[in-house]
Image (tube, rainbow, N blue to C red):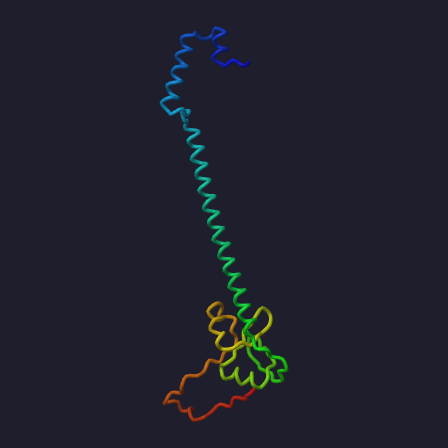
Length: 181
């Protein structure tokens, strides 16, 4: 069984030695011409092309998954950055005895602040932002940085009013700051 098929056919008398030599010579010449590589058939060429297409498709899927992961990690980083920014710059509201009402979407919410914080909220030097499920009061300087990242978090920010127009009929009337609603 260790003999090659050609040798077995020769021993059985089915092929002549001369045709066997000629076949070996032809095989040797073909392998020399192809650089020692076997001659590629159309089946192997198709299989190789299909494998290359599959490799390219896998690379494209991997790139898309990497892009999605990067976007998701950037989103998480932005959320954490906002959370840290609000937490580091929040105004402590301990001992607040005045109720400050504001809206969050369509619901009316309230927080307790002291008189000084209420005056600053009305004047636009403080703002109220939503952080997760609770509300924080932050300085006006931080509001711009929070708005850059997520403007929906800023709920109350009374921006300082521009100078009154000359043709405003109510310019002479002052609105009291202590008006409660």
